[in-house]
Image 1 (cartoon, rainbow, N blue to C red):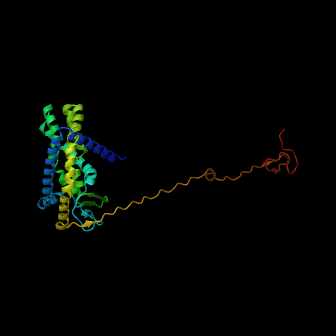
Image 2: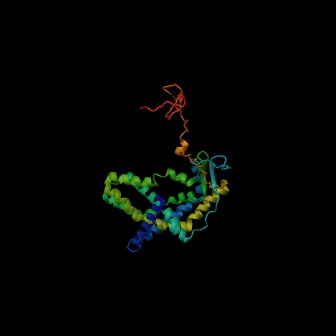
Length: 311
């Protein structure tokens, strides 16, 4: 099992446990309020970010960090629209088990990034302030609403091609690279570092766990409902704006398997093959009596008949 698949399974198990605790305790009222506020704010944020006027401004800002569009993806680097259809709707199974689990982890990381900056700039030193900050995770779906715009970018089929490295990536991933300190694993590590400096190792370990337990269920449920009913409507708006108004060319991406040259099989020589045939060396000697040349391993001289054995 790969590391990403393992994390996904652990995240799913955590969600099941936390939702069970929320539902069967008095916390279910907080879950309902936080989820309702989260859905309302996410819908407003998604509608605002995907509106024509707002995205027109975003398009100009994004052109600072992404290359211009080109007519031929094979010719040079640029931005394009990937071939394919934007989903009209998502089924409950996909929303609950696939997109809900996959997408809900990113807003949690964004929450940790926001809490990290609150700790730094508010200079929180007392326990009461820290507890209040931890309890604010109940309403984390409200202040992580900018994630809706990043999701819309990621799913809008707006892609970037770098011919020099022969690499294709989504424009949303390019934006995410700039946000990795606030919406990535580094955000969690930064939060732990700040907590460790101010409150010690125990709090640095317990605060993220408690905050994660509080925020995971509201964020997950908000994500599921948002993806099921609203997300792809906003994605389609952005896609149509890029296609019809900005006239970005559509690029067909083909996954071509790389042919790996087979290494030449080394020839293993046997001992018999490796040995060089040596010429037979014949040593001749002379008869001590008649001085005739005689071959080796003979007992009598072939000329005079004298014995050659040494007594």
